[in-house]
Amino acid sequence: MNYKRVTLLCGHYGSGKTNIAVNMALDLKHQADRVLIADLDIVNPYFRTKDSNEDFEKAGIRLISSAFANTNLDAPALPQEMYAIIDDRSFHAVVDVGGDDVGAVALGRLSKAIADENDYDMYLVVNCYRPLTRDAASTLQVKKEIEEASRLSFTGVINGSNLAADTKAEDVLASMDYAREVAEAAGIPLAATAVQESLLDELKGKIENLFPMKLQKRPI
Amino acid sequence: MGEKVLMKGNEAIAEAAIQAGCRHYFGYPITPQTEIAAYMAKRMPKIGGLFLQAESEIAAINMVYGCSSAGMRVMTSSSSPGISLKSEGLSYLAGADLPAVIVNAQRGGPGLGGIQPSQSDYFQATRGGGHGDYHMLVLAPASVQEMAELTVKAFDLADRYRMTCMILADGTTGQMMEPVSFDFVPGEPVAKPWATTGTKMERKHNIVNSLYLLPDVLEQKNIERYEKYEKIKETETMAEEFMVEDADIVIVAFGIAARVSKNAVIAARKNGIKAGLIRPITLWPYPEKIVAKAAEHAKQFISVELSMGQMIEDVKLAVDGKAPVSLCFRAGGMIPMPEQVYDAIAEADKKLKGGN
Image (tube, rainbow over all chains, first blue to last red; front, side):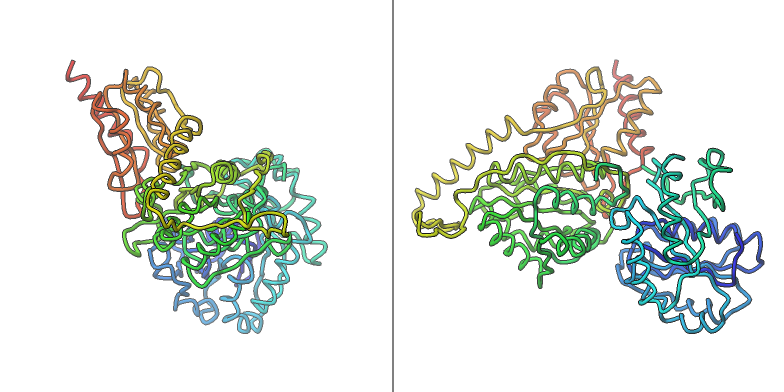
């Protein structure tokens, strides 16, 4: 992938944002010297970027996350360090934003600085296998709500359509019409289709702009 | 929704409730079950249903009481501390023989505890929770698919027996995402001639109440209820048995603990240890006959729980002294790993073989 200085990942919750953000930060570290990943999720106290902290430390990626992520304090707290995203331009930043418009509210605090600098991509992560974003119309509704809450406009779509560990290559292929329809209706490019590494061989050549991912979690 | 969709367990419960004909949901947010309320808030207004965020858990359960009295399929959901608040209402629902579905996505306790998964509300769920002589039906799902299927079943059972039916889930099953399909068919609607739906001046008015002025009438009511419970024990008990038939060591575990344990049982079998798993799906009625049958050949039972040991009492009652019963646990929001369960099996195996 080509990265702007700031990469923002938003979408319906459960669309796959966190997995994509984690993998993007690791990918970006091959292209940029100083990389940070920021977790601005104020909605979900579970499944946080912090779960991959070891990988970030190993790769030399700075993690900005609420001190309370993965603890029993279920508070919508933002990390004070979040201002480094806009204040320290020596870093490339990947920002994992919470789900829906409710989660995107947190981004509003930074949106003016991000827009003024104008070196960012904001991706709409979509998953047609989530019950409330099964079609383009409902997905575009989520897009509109996130843009209103964050006061930023999307620059691309990332197709993250998946059925968790059960995802097969044909499920990804079957999601492509939906993803292209969303991108076309939104008037922005389909920047990537994010897939589990294990599906890469089956999908190579069939889908443009594949983004391979290692999944964060081990299913029980 | 015939095809598979990716859902959180909590969302699957909410969607299944809607498909079971539930159009009334009353609740109050608490992690880790808030997705149920969030899903209902989005979906109910679109299908002519009602989502209402009450001012408290206590208010919500009493709205459930009123709604059920009027013959509607109704649900509320909460997590451990919130269920404690609802307990008075649960007793009143039982006393008035009202059907309702209650979801508990358990978290670590006691008190405010934490937001991580737990199974330490087993006593509260299976022994009643509120005051008085009564039981709830208690179903324990172990996958997102089962969250959906058991929710539909919960509505059917609740209506058929005029009882509250609790889905006893936990933070893990509520939060985890798995593919789920909704191609099941809900049961036939049950007639509710007792409901307070207005007489239209055509019949005597119905009364829904739990107050009895004469103690002998109340006693008789309790006896009738317990006769019904006995019938339910005979017909509605559910459990999954995995490699139990020839097992020397039998794990008993429900919900997420059973999922972890299954991996340990598979690993034990690979290493030549005759292990098996009984997974109670109904916690009340408890599958005591299935456990008792296993006790005819098993030499050791291990109750695996996300608690300090609650279900172990039911295992001991069912085993009835025929074999020792030990506990393998994590508590306070921690989850046992398959390795921990495997070690418990291996240790038991060593003791058994050493004894020969």
